Figure 1: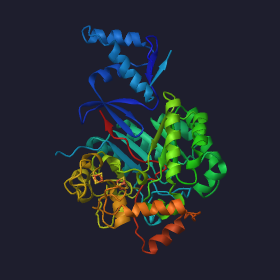
Figure 2: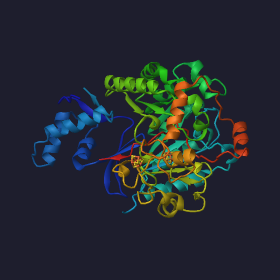
Figure 3: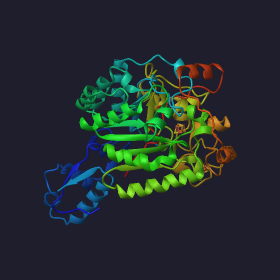
Figure 4: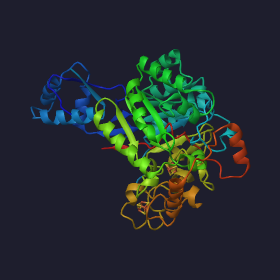
Amino acid sequence: MNVADAAKPRLTAKARLKWDAVRQKHLLLFPEGVLLLNQTAHDVLALCDGRRSVAEIVQTLAAQYRGAAIDADVKAILSRLAEKSFVAMDN
Amino acid sequence: MQTQRPFSLLCELTYRCPLQCPYCSNPLDFARRAHELSTPEWKRALTEAAALGVVQAHFSGGEPLLRPDATEIIRHAHDLELYTNLSTGGTLLTETLAGQLRAAGLDSLQVSIQDADAENSDRMAGGAPSFAKKIEAARLAKAAGLSLTLNVVLQRQNIGRMEAIIALAEQLGAERLELANTQFNGWALKNRAALLPTRAQVQDAARLARAARERLKGRMEILYVLPDYFEPFPKACLHGWGRVFMAVAPDGTALPCQTAREIRGLTFDNVRERSLQKIWFESEAFCKFRGTDWLPEPCRSCSRKEADFGGCRCQAFLLTGEAAATDPACSLAPRHDLVDRALAETEAATEAQLIYRTANASLRISEAGQPIGSIGSRRRQTPKLPGPRE
Ligand code: SF4
Ligand code: SF4
Protein backbone atom coordinates (compact mmCIF):
# COMPACT_ATOMS: atom_id res chain seq x y z
CA MET A 1 0.00 0.00 0.00
CA ASN A 2 1.26 3.45 -0.89
CA VAL A 3 2.21 5.68 2.04
CA ALA A 4 2.18 9.42 1.33
CA ASP A 5 4.35 11.85 3.30
CA ALA A 6 1.30 13.97 4.10
CA ALA A 7 -0.89 11.10 5.31
CA LYS A 8 -1.76 11.16 8.99
CA PRO A 9 -1.81 7.59 10.25
CA ARG A 10 -3.69 6.47 13.32
CA LEU A 11 -4.49 3.14 14.91
CA THR A 12 -7.90 1.81 13.90
CA ALA A 13 -10.58 1.13 16.49
CA LYS A 14 -9.82 -2.56 16.69
CA ALA A 15 -6.07 -2.20 17.31
CA ARG A 16 -4.35 -1.36 20.58
CA LEU A 17 -0.77 -0.99 21.71
CA LYS A 18 0.23 -2.61 24.94
CA TRP A 19 3.37 -2.94 26.99
CA ASP A 20 3.32 -6.52 28.23
CA ALA A 21 4.88 -6.36 31.67
CA VAL A 22 4.86 -10.15 32.08
CA ARG A 23 6.85 -10.80 28.89
CA GLN A 24 8.63 -7.43 28.76
CA LYS A 25 7.55 -6.88 25.16
CA HIS A 26 5.60 -4.35 23.12
CA LEU A 27 2.46 -5.87 21.62
CA LEU A 28 -0.14 -4.83 19.11
CA LEU A 29 -3.49 -6.35 20.06
CA PHE A 30 -6.43 -6.90 17.74
CA PRO A 31 -9.44 -9.21 17.66
CA GLU A 32 -8.12 -12.73 18.10
CA GLY A 33 -4.51 -11.97 17.51
CA VAL A 34 -1.30 -10.54 18.87
CA LEU A 35 1.65 -9.05 17.07
CA LEU A 36 4.94 -8.96 18.93
CA LEU A 37 6.48 -5.64 17.92
CA ASN A 38 10.12 -4.85 17.48
CA GLN A 39 11.34 -1.52 18.83
CA THR A 40 11.06 0.36 15.53
CA ALA A 41 7.53 -0.85 14.80
CA HIS A 42 6.51 0.12 18.31
CA ASP A 43 8.08 3.57 18.04
CA VAL A 44 6.31 4.20 14.75
CA LEU A 45 2.94 3.08 16.08
CA ALA A 46 3.30 5.11 19.23
CA LEU A 47 3.44 8.23 17.03
CA CYS A 48 0.39 7.30 14.93
CA ASP A 49 -2.05 9.68 16.61
CA GLY A 50 -3.94 10.94 13.54
CA ARG A 51 -2.34 14.40 13.94
CA ARG A 52 1.26 13.83 12.94
CA SER A 53 1.98 13.29 9.26
CA VAL A 54 4.20 10.48 8.01
CA ALA A 55 6.89 13.05 7.24
CA GLU A 56 6.76 14.29 10.84
CA ILE A 57 6.93 10.77 12.21
CA VAL A 58 10.01 10.10 10.09
CA GLN A 59 11.59 13.32 11.31
CA THR A 60 10.86 12.64 14.96
CA LEU A 61 12.25 9.12 14.78
CA ALA A 62 15.29 10.16 12.79
CA ALA A 63 16.14 12.56 15.59
CA GLN A 64 15.49 9.89 18.19
CA TYR A 65 17.69 7.42 16.28
CA ARG A 66 20.47 9.99 15.79
CA GLY A 67 19.83 10.77 12.15
CA ALA A 68 19.53 7.25 10.81
CA ALA A 69 17.88 7.03 7.38
CA ILE A 70 14.59 5.45 8.28
CA ASP A 71 12.15 6.89 5.77
CA ALA A 72 11.81 3.61 3.85
CA ASP A 73 11.54 1.55 7.04
CA VAL A 74 8.77 3.67 8.49
CA LYS A 75 6.80 3.55 5.26
CA ALA A 76 7.24 -0.20 4.93
CA ILE A 77 5.96 -0.73 8.47
CA LEU A 78 2.97 1.56 7.93
CA SER A 79 2.16 -0.03 4.62
CA ARG A 80 2.11 -3.51 6.12
CA LEU A 81 -0.02 -2.46 9.08
CA ALA A 82 -2.42 -0.50 6.86
CA GLU A 83 -2.97 -3.55 4.69
CA LYS A 84 -4.12 -5.42 7.78
CA SER A 85 -6.26 -2.42 8.74
CA PHE A 86 -4.41 -1.87 12.00
CA VAL A 87 -3.56 1.61 10.80
CA ALA A 88 -5.74 4.01 8.85
CA MET A 89 -4.27 6.85 6.80
CA ASP A 90 -6.23 10.06 6.93
CA ASN A 91 -5.09 12.76 4.56
CA MET B 1 11.49 -26.64 26.68
CA GLN B 2 10.05 -24.01 28.96
CA THR B 3 6.26 -23.80 28.99
CA GLN B 4 5.16 -20.51 27.54
CA ARG B 5 2.37 -18.44 28.99
CA PRO B 6 -1.08 -18.04 27.45
CA PHE B 7 -1.95 -14.92 25.46
CA SER B 8 -5.63 -15.44 25.25
CA LEU B 9 -8.52 -16.37 27.53
CA LEU B 10 -11.97 -17.31 26.29
CA CYS B 11 -14.67 -16.65 28.87
CA GLU B 12 -17.88 -18.46 28.05
CA LEU B 13 -20.19 -16.50 30.27
CA THR B 14 -23.25 -18.71 29.83
CA TYR B 15 -24.63 -21.57 27.78
CA ARG B 16 -28.07 -19.97 27.74
CA CYS B 17 -29.01 -18.67 24.31
CA PRO B 18 -32.15 -17.55 22.50
CA LEU B 19 -30.84 -19.15 19.30
CA GLN B 20 -30.46 -22.82 18.37
CA CYS B 21 -27.73 -23.04 15.73
CA PRO B 22 -27.25 -26.66 14.73
CA TYR B 23 -23.46 -26.19 14.56
CA CYS B 24 -23.10 -24.70 18.02
CA SER B 25 -19.97 -25.97 19.71
CA ASN B 26 -21.41 -25.78 23.18
CA PRO B 27 -21.45 -29.23 24.72
CA LEU B 28 -24.19 -31.58 23.62
CA ASP B 29 -25.15 -31.82 27.29
CA PHE B 30 -25.06 -28.03 27.91
CA ALA B 31 -28.51 -28.20 29.52
CA ARG B 32 -26.98 -30.27 32.34
CA ARG B 33 -24.25 -27.75 33.13
CA ALA B 34 -26.13 -24.79 34.46
CA HIS B 35 -24.09 -23.81 37.53
CA GLU B 36 -22.59 -20.53 36.27
CA LEU B 37 -19.71 -18.61 37.81
CA SER B 38 -20.72 -15.51 39.75
CA THR B 39 -19.56 -11.99 38.96
CA PRO B 40 -16.76 -12.03 41.58
CA GLU B 41 -15.62 -15.45 40.36
CA TRP B 42 -15.28 -14.21 36.78
CA LYS B 43 -13.43 -11.13 37.99
CA ARG B 44 -11.01 -13.21 40.00
CA ALA B 45 -10.38 -15.53 37.05
CA LEU B 46 -9.60 -12.50 34.87
CA THR B 47 -7.27 -11.03 37.47
CA GLU B 48 -5.41 -14.33 37.68
CA ALA B 49 -5.29 -14.54 33.89
CA ALA B 50 -3.70 -11.10 33.56
CA ALA B 51 -1.02 -12.04 36.08
CA LEU B 52 -0.38 -15.24 34.16
CA GLY B 53 0.33 -13.33 30.95
CA VAL B 54 -3.03 -13.27 29.20
CA VAL B 55 -3.41 -10.08 27.16
CA GLN B 56 -6.76 -10.72 25.52
CA ALA B 57 -10.11 -11.72 26.93
CA HIS B 58 -12.83 -13.01 24.63
CA PHE B 59 -16.36 -13.16 25.92
CA SER B 60 -18.83 -15.52 24.34
CA GLY B 61 -21.47 -18.07 25.24
CA GLY B 62 -24.25 -19.09 24.64
CA GLU B 63 -25.40 -15.54 24.47
CA PRO B 64 -23.10 -13.56 26.78
CA LEU B 65 -25.47 -10.60 26.87
CA LEU B 66 -27.98 -12.73 28.77
CA ARG B 67 -25.73 -12.08 31.77
CA PRO B 68 -26.75 -8.74 33.31
CA ASP B 69 -23.16 -8.41 34.59
CA ALA B 70 -21.53 -8.79 31.15
CA THR B 71 -20.63 -5.09 31.02
CA GLU B 72 -19.25 -5.13 34.54
CA ILE B 73 -17.04 -8.15 33.80
CA ILE B 74 -15.79 -6.55 30.58
CA ARG B 75 -14.97 -3.34 32.44
CA HIS B 76 -12.93 -5.35 34.90
CA ALA B 77 -10.98 -6.96 32.06
CA HIS B 78 -10.42 -3.53 30.53
CA ASP B 79 -9.16 -2.17 33.86
CA LEU B 80 -6.65 -5.03 33.87
CA GLU B 81 -5.48 -3.68 30.49
CA LEU B 82 -6.69 -6.73 28.63
CA TYR B 83 -7.88 -6.40 25.05
CA THR B 84 -11.58 -7.24 25.17
CA ASN B 85 -13.67 -8.88 22.52
CA LEU B 86 -17.34 -9.80 22.75
CA SER B 87 -19.12 -12.30 20.51
CA THR B 88 -22.87 -12.00 20.45
CA GLY B 89 -25.79 -13.26 18.44
CA GLY B 90 -26.91 -9.64 18.50
CA THR B 91 -30.57 -10.12 19.36
CA LEU B 92 -30.27 -8.50 22.80
CA LEU B 93 -28.18 -5.48 21.92
CA THR B 94 -29.83 -2.11 22.51
CA GLU B 95 -28.57 1.41 21.99
CA THR B 96 -28.08 1.80 25.73
CA LEU B 97 -26.19 -1.45 26.06
CA ALA B 98 -23.96 -0.66 23.08
CA GLY B 99 -23.09 2.65 24.75
CA GLN B 100 -22.38 0.94 28.05
CA LEU B 101 -20.12 -1.61 26.40
CA ARG B 102 -18.23 1.15 24.66
CA ALA B 103 -17.87 3.05 27.94
CA ALA B 104 -16.65 -0.13 29.63
CA GLY B 105 -13.76 -0.16 27.17
CA LEU B 106 -14.84 -2.95 24.86
CA ASP B 107 -12.28 -3.12 22.04
CA SER B 108 -14.11 -5.31 19.56
CA LEU B 109 -17.65 -6.55 19.02
CA GLN B 110 -18.49 -9.54 16.88
CA VAL B 111 -22.03 -10.09 15.69
CA SER B 112 -22.93 -13.41 14.12
CA ILE B 113 -25.33 -13.85 11.27
CA GLN B 114 -26.22 -17.18 9.74
CA ASP B 115 -26.76 -16.00 6.18
CA ALA B 116 -27.14 -12.83 4.11
CA ASP B 117 -30.92 -12.83 4.00
CA ALA B 118 -33.59 -13.06 6.65
CA GLU B 119 -35.26 -16.27 5.61
CA ASN B 120 -32.15 -18.42 5.40
CA SER B 121 -30.50 -16.84 8.41
CA ASP B 122 -33.57 -17.34 10.58
CA ARG B 123 -33.98 -20.93 9.46
CA MET B 124 -30.39 -21.79 10.39
CA ALA B 125 -30.48 -19.92 13.73
CA GLY B 126 -33.72 -21.60 14.79
CA GLY B 127 -35.90 -20.06 17.50
CA ALA B 128 -37.73 -16.79 16.96
CA PRO B 129 -36.81 -14.66 13.91
CA SER B 130 -33.47 -13.02 14.64
CA PHE B 131 -32.01 -11.64 11.41
CA ALA B 132 -33.57 -8.17 11.59
CA LYS B 133 -32.36 -7.77 15.17
CA LYS B 134 -28.86 -8.86 14.20
CA ILE B 135 -28.67 -6.27 11.45
CA GLU B 136 -29.95 -3.65 13.88
CA ALA B 137 -27.28 -4.76 16.38
CA ALA B 138 -24.57 -4.26 13.78
CA ARG B 139 -25.89 -0.72 13.15
CA LEU B 140 -26.06 0.07 16.85
CA ALA B 141 -22.52 -1.15 17.35
CA LYS B 142 -21.24 1.10 14.58
CA ALA B 143 -23.26 4.05 15.87
CA ALA B 144 -21.74 3.56 19.34
CA GLY B 145 -18.26 3.66 17.81
CA LEU B 146 -17.47 0.01 18.47
CA SER B 147 -15.18 -1.89 16.14
CA LEU B 148 -17.44 -4.35 14.34
CA THR B 149 -16.72 -7.83 13.06
CA LEU B 150 -19.40 -9.77 11.25
CA ASN B 151 -19.11 -13.51 11.88
CA VAL B 152 -20.55 -16.16 9.64
CA VAL B 153 -20.11 -19.88 10.09
CA LEU B 154 -19.92 -21.39 6.64
CA GLN B 155 -21.63 -24.66 5.88
CA ARG B 156 -23.28 -26.34 2.94
CA GLN B 157 -26.45 -24.28 3.11
CA ASN B 158 -24.88 -20.80 3.04
CA ILE B 159 -21.46 -21.25 1.45
CA GLY B 160 -22.97 -20.65 -1.99
CA ARG B 161 -24.01 -17.14 -0.94
CA MET B 162 -20.57 -15.74 -0.13
CA GLU B 163 -20.98 -12.78 -2.49
CA ALA B 164 -24.17 -11.64 -0.81
CA ILE B 165 -22.59 -12.12 2.63
CA ILE B 166 -19.55 -10.04 1.69
CA ALA B 167 -21.79 -7.33 0.20
CA LEU B 168 -23.83 -7.21 3.40
CA ALA B 169 -20.71 -6.86 5.54
CA GLU B 170 -19.57 -3.95 3.37
CA GLN B 171 -22.95 -2.32 3.55
CA LEU B 172 -22.93 -2.57 7.35
CA GLY B 173 -19.47 -1.02 7.51
CA ALA B 174 -17.92 -3.99 9.30
CA GLU B 175 -14.19 -3.63 9.82
CA ARG B 176 -13.78 -7.37 9.64
CA LEU B 177 -15.66 -10.27 8.17
CA GLU B 178 -14.92 -13.64 9.61
CA LEU B 179 -15.93 -16.51 7.36
CA ALA B 180 -15.35 -19.53 9.55
CA ASN B 181 -15.85 -22.96 8.14
CA THR B 182 -17.74 -25.25 10.47
CA GLN B 183 -15.55 -27.24 12.81
CA PHE B 184 -17.08 -30.67 13.09
CA ASN B 185 -17.24 -31.27 16.83
CA GLY B 186 -20.24 -31.26 19.17
CA TRP B 187 -23.52 -30.27 17.53
CA ALA B 188 -21.86 -29.76 14.18
CA LEU B 189 -20.64 -33.35 14.12
CA LYS B 190 -24.18 -34.52 14.88
CA ASN B 191 -25.33 -32.46 11.90
CA ARG B 192 -22.37 -33.13 9.65
CA ALA B 193 -24.41 -34.80 6.93
CA ALA B 194 -26.44 -31.60 6.51
CA LEU B 195 -23.56 -29.14 7.00
CA LEU B 196 -20.44 -30.48 5.31
CA PRO B 197 -19.93 -28.62 2.03
CA THR B 198 -18.70 -30.22 -1.17
CA ARG B 199 -15.15 -29.75 -2.41
CA ALA B 200 -16.37 -27.62 -5.31
CA GLN B 201 -18.24 -25.32 -2.91
CA VAL B 202 -15.18 -24.91 -0.70
CA GLN B 203 -12.93 -24.11 -3.64
CA ASP B 204 -15.38 -21.55 -5.01
CA ALA B 205 -15.67 -19.93 -1.61
CA ALA B 206 -11.89 -19.73 -1.24
CA ARG B 207 -11.61 -18.04 -4.62
CA LEU B 208 -14.31 -15.50 -3.76
CA ALA B 209 -12.71 -14.78 -0.38
CA ARG B 210 -9.32 -14.17 -2.00
CA ALA B 211 -10.79 -11.82 -4.60
CA ALA B 212 -12.76 -9.88 -1.99
CA ARG B 213 -9.74 -9.66 0.30
CA GLU B 214 -7.73 -8.10 -2.51
CA ARG B 215 -10.51 -5.71 -3.51
CA LEU B 216 -11.23 -4.55 0.06
CA LYS B 217 -7.65 -4.30 1.29
CA GLY B 218 -7.31 -1.51 3.83
CA ARG B 219 -11.09 -1.18 4.19
CA MET B 220 -12.38 -4.50 5.45
CA GLU B 221 -10.33 -7.42 6.64
CA ILE B 222 -11.62 -10.79 5.45
CA LEU B 223 -10.73 -13.93 7.33
CA TYR B 224 -11.28 -17.17 5.57
CA VAL B 225 -9.64 -20.39 6.68
CA LEU B 226 -9.84 -23.52 4.56
CA PRO B 227 -11.68 -26.26 6.43
CA ASP B 228 -9.37 -29.03 7.55
CA TYR B 229 -11.36 -31.82 5.88
CA PHE B 230 -10.29 -30.38 2.53
CA GLU B 231 -6.62 -29.83 3.15
CA PRO B 232 -3.80 -32.37 3.09
CA PHE B 233 -2.57 -31.49 6.58
CA PRO B 234 -4.36 -30.35 9.70
CA LYS B 235 -3.87 -26.99 11.34
CA ALA B 236 -2.29 -26.53 14.70
CA CYS B 237 -5.39 -26.42 16.75
CA LEU B 238 -5.33 -23.08 18.56
CA HIS B 239 -1.58 -22.95 17.93
CA GLY B 240 -1.03 -26.09 19.88
CA TRP B 241 -2.55 -27.55 23.00
CA GLY B 242 -1.74 -25.51 26.09
CA ARG B 243 0.52 -23.08 24.23
CA VAL B 244 -1.29 -19.75 23.86
CA PHE B 245 -4.95 -20.30 24.64
CA MET B 246 -7.17 -21.20 27.55
CA ALA B 247 -10.96 -21.34 27.86
CA VAL B 248 -13.16 -21.12 30.93
CA ALA B 249 -16.62 -22.64 30.57
CA PRO B 250 -19.71 -21.11 32.22
CA ASP B 251 -19.39 -23.50 35.16
CA GLY B 252 -15.72 -22.60 35.70
CA THR B 253 -14.14 -25.62 34.03
CA ALA B 254 -10.78 -24.62 32.54
CA LEU B 255 -10.13 -26.10 29.12
CA PRO B 256 -7.19 -26.18 26.71
CA CYS B 257 -9.70 -25.81 23.88
CA GLN B 258 -13.34 -24.84 23.96
CA THR B 259 -14.41 -28.28 22.85
CA ALA B 260 -11.85 -30.31 24.81
CA ARG B 261 -14.47 -31.74 27.11
CA GLU B 262 -15.46 -33.95 24.20
CA ILE B 263 -12.52 -36.05 25.25
CA ARG B 264 -13.72 -38.50 27.83
CA GLY B 265 -11.16 -39.73 30.30
CA LEU B 266 -9.37 -36.38 30.62
CA THR B 267 -9.76 -34.59 33.95
CA PHE B 268 -10.36 -30.85 33.96
CA ASP B 269 -9.83 -28.43 36.81
CA ASN B 270 -12.23 -25.70 37.84
CA VAL B 271 -11.29 -22.09 38.48
CA ARG B 272 -13.42 -22.27 41.61
CA GLU B 273 -10.90 -24.67 43.11
CA ARG B 274 -7.48 -23.89 41.60
CA SER B 275 -5.78 -20.78 40.31
CA LEU B 276 -5.40 -20.33 36.57
CA GLN B 277 -1.64 -20.30 37.08
CA LYS B 278 -1.66 -23.75 38.64
CA ILE B 279 -4.11 -25.07 36.08
CA TRP B 280 -2.02 -23.81 33.17
CA PHE B 281 1.30 -25.17 34.35
CA GLU B 282 0.28 -28.26 36.32
CA SER B 283 -3.14 -29.67 35.45
CA GLU B 284 -3.40 -33.03 33.75
CA ALA B 285 -5.57 -31.70 30.93
CA PHE B 286 -3.13 -28.94 29.95
CA CYS B 287 0.03 -31.00 30.32
CA LYS B 288 -1.14 -34.15 28.58
CA PHE B 289 -0.94 -33.02 24.95
CA ARG B 290 1.39 -30.05 25.30
CA GLY B 291 4.39 -30.00 22.99
CA THR B 292 5.40 -32.95 20.82
CA ASP B 293 6.76 -35.62 23.19
CA TRP B 294 3.44 -37.45 23.44
CA LEU B 295 2.91 -37.70 19.67
CA PRO B 296 2.30 -41.08 18.02
CA GLU B 297 3.59 -42.16 14.65
CA PRO B 298 3.41 -41.01 11.90
CA CYS B 299 3.57 -37.57 13.57
CA ARG B 300 6.59 -38.43 15.72
CA SER B 301 8.84 -38.74 12.68
CA CYS B 302 7.05 -36.14 10.58
CA SER B 303 8.73 -32.85 9.67
CA ARG B 304 5.48 -30.93 10.22
CA LYS B 305 5.04 -31.83 13.86
CA GLU B 306 6.25 -28.48 15.21
CA ALA B 307 3.81 -26.75 12.84
CA ASP B 308 0.61 -28.65 13.57
CA PHE B 309 1.28 -30.75 16.70
CA GLY B 310 -0.62 -33.65 15.16
CA GLY B 311 -3.79 -31.63 14.60
CA CYS B 312 -6.94 -31.50 16.69
CA ARG B 313 -7.28 -33.69 19.80
CA CYS B 314 -11.05 -33.40 19.95
CA GLN B 315 -11.42 -34.42 16.34
CA ALA B 316 -9.03 -37.33 16.87
CA PHE B 317 -11.08 -38.51 19.81
CA LEU B 318 -14.49 -37.99 18.26
CA LEU B 319 -13.63 -39.77 15.04
CA THR B 320 -11.29 -42.53 16.23
CA GLY B 321 -12.09 -42.85 19.93
CA GLU B 322 -8.38 -42.17 20.69
CA ALA B 323 -7.47 -38.66 21.84
CA ALA B 324 -3.77 -39.31 21.22
CA ALA B 325 -4.25 -40.46 17.63
CA THR B 326 -3.10 -38.47 14.62
CA ASP B 327 -5.93 -36.16 13.58
CA PRO B 328 -7.85 -38.08 10.88
CA ALA B 329 -8.04 -34.85 8.86
CA CYS B 330 -4.35 -35.41 8.06
CA SER B 331 -3.81 -37.25 4.77
CA LEU B 332 -1.02 -39.26 6.47
CA ALA B 333 -3.21 -40.36 9.39
CA PRO B 334 -3.88 -44.10 9.72
CA ARG B 335 -7.60 -43.30 9.98
CA HIS B 336 -7.83 -40.70 7.23
CA ASP B 337 -10.40 -43.01 5.65
CA LEU B 338 -12.93 -41.69 8.20
CA VAL B 339 -12.72 -38.21 6.72
CA ASP B 340 -12.58 -39.47 3.14
CA ARG B 341 -15.76 -41.43 3.72
CA ALA B 342 -17.62 -38.40 5.14
CA LEU B 343 -16.52 -36.38 2.11
CA ALA B 344 -17.66 -39.08 -0.31
CA GLU B 345 -21.03 -39.24 1.40
CA THR B 346 -21.38 -35.47 1.06
CA GLU B 347 -20.67 -35.52 -2.65
CA ALA B 348 -23.47 -38.08 -3.02
CA ALA B 349 -25.83 -36.53 -0.48
CA THR B 350 -29.35 -35.35 -0.85
CA GLU B 351 -30.63 -33.16 1.99
CA ALA B 352 -30.24 -34.28 5.59
CA GLN B 353 -32.27 -33.29 8.61
CA LEU B 354 -30.92 -30.67 11.07
CA ILE B 355 -30.93 -31.22 14.82
CA TYR B 356 -31.27 -27.82 16.47
CA ARG B 357 -29.45 -26.96 19.67
CA THR B 358 -32.34 -26.87 22.10
CA ALA B 359 -32.43 -27.77 25.76
CA ASN B 360 -34.72 -30.69 24.93
CA ALA B 361 -32.39 -32.08 22.32
CA SER B 362 -29.50 -31.62 24.74
CA LEU B 363 -31.21 -33.60 27.48
CA ARG B 364 -32.32 -36.30 25.06
CA ILE B 365 -28.91 -36.72 23.44
CA SER B 366 -26.95 -36.74 26.66
CA GLU B 367 -29.40 -39.14 28.29
CA ALA B 368 -29.05 -41.53 25.42
CA GLY B 369 -25.42 -41.97 26.45
CA GLN B 370 -23.95 -40.47 23.30
CA PRO B 371 -20.48 -39.03 23.62
CA ILE B 372 -21.21 -35.99 25.72
CA GLY B 373 -19.46 -33.02 27.11
CA SER B 374 -17.96 -30.85 24.45
CA ILE B 375 -17.60 -27.55 26.17
CA GLY B 376 -17.22 -24.79 23.77
CA SER B 377 -17.98 -21.42 22.41
CA ARG B 378 -19.95 -21.86 19.29
CA ARG B 379 -17.76 -21.83 16.28
CA ARG B 380 -19.85 -19.02 14.90
CA GLN B 381 -18.17 -16.93 17.53
CA THR B 382 -14.60 -17.96 17.93
CA PRO B 383 -12.96 -20.17 15.38
CA LYS B 384 -9.18 -20.49 15.21
CA LEU B 385 -7.08 -17.94 16.94
CA PRO B 386 -4.30 -16.41 14.96
CA GLY B 387 -1.47 -16.68 17.42
CA PRO B 388 1.40 -14.44 18.18
CA ARG B 389 3.34 -13.37 15.14
CA GLU B 390 6.72 -11.77 15.03
S1 SF4 C 1 1.52 -36.84 10.25
FE1 SF4 C 1 1.08 -35.71 12.11
S2 SF4 C 1 2.66 -34.11 12.19
FE2 SF4 C 1 2.64 -34.94 10.07
S3 SF4 C 1 1.28 -33.57 8.96
FE3 SF4 C 1 0.01 -35.28 9.70
S4 SF4 C 1 -0.79 -34.59 11.66
FE4 SF4 C 1 0.90 -33.23 11.15
S1 SF4 D 1 -8.27 -30.09 18.72
FE1 SF4 D 1 -7.93 -28.22 19.61
S2 SF4 D 1 -9.02 -26.78 18.32
FE2 SF4 D 1 -9.70 -28.74 17.75
S3 SF4 D 1 -11.47 -29.01 18.86
FE3 SF4 D 1 -9.87 -29.91 20.05
S4 SF4 D 1 -9.05 -28.47 21.26
FE4 SF4 D 1 -10.32 -27.47 19.77
